[in-house]
Image 1 (cartoon, rainbow, N blue to C red):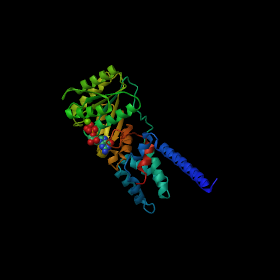
Image 2 (cartoon, protein in one colour; image 1 turned 120 degrees about the vertical axis):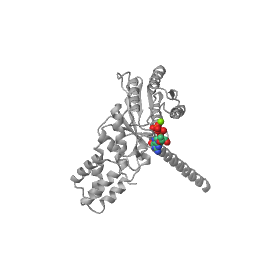
Image 3 (cartoon, protein in one colour; image 1 turned 45 degrees about the vertical axis):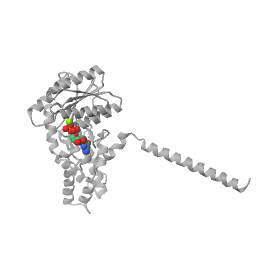
Image 4 (cartoon, helix red, strand yellow; image 1 turned 180 degrees about the horizontal axis):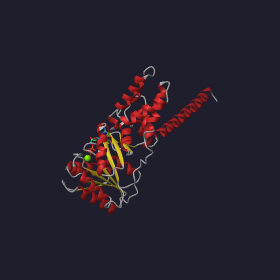
Length: 329
Ligand SMILES: Nc1nc2c(ncn2[C@@H]2O[C@H](COP(=O)(O)OP(=O)(O)O)[C@@H](O)[C@H]2O)c(=O)[nH]1
Ligand SMILES: [Mg+2]
């Protein structure tokens, strides 16, 4: 064999080895990216910033003013007075010696503010009923679309009920989402009795053999008696007069700050709120509101909204959330 043949054979072997290496690497990368959306999403549940303010609050060492500054940083992130006091007192007692120790202590104390609550939706009904309440603009209709998508992705069929009959545009919005999702939407005429729409939606879901019916409601004037009475009626109809169960998901805009807590309290006096979906966490550095909602109201946060798209709803996980909140920006 001539030298040129050896060169060609060696070149061939090198090319094959390189190709093999590339294929293996691409596959490994694909595997890494193939993690389910649910485990990828929480890395962007909340805008960061708390870590930076805690870092500067700690400064070079610890004295009384350090603890005041840390308290301020937590309050500025909307963690709420009760939880902040609790966290700072506990962390102080641990006498952290450097910033990392302080941060670790803050992390574990924040995590301990959450209850060991069941954060899944109760799907036991046939169909399961989810009533979505909250003030105008909080993100109810969008959250319903996101939730429907999540449920569909797990193989469940969903019917949507447009019981926000106050404005025709509100029902139109739900119909548009329904079209995109391929989900049936039951609506009434403008001004129709919302409870009757809820009733019709439930009947349609039964007739279709659907797994879940999600009911959108009006959110105007949350302080007014009419709306609250209306919600009470919807709840009664949707639970067959209180004999079956319904999830009542309260949608709360994270950017509404501590005022949001007042809203939760008001709604909770009318309907048995079973969970909170906190929306627009992508638009605020005050994600601590999640801690305040649970601490002050004892209602489990079940979902967080992190954007306007159909996929932007994350099942809430306290530990992951706190890790995320304290991640350096
Ligand atoms: N950035 C962001 N926008 C949201 C989120 N959820 C809802 N929105 C927006 O908030 C606005 C009001 O939402 P909508 O569902 O109509 O609220 P509703 O009046 O309670 O039904 C819309 O522009 C939504 O796109 C979220 O998690 N993040
Ligand atoms: Mg709406």
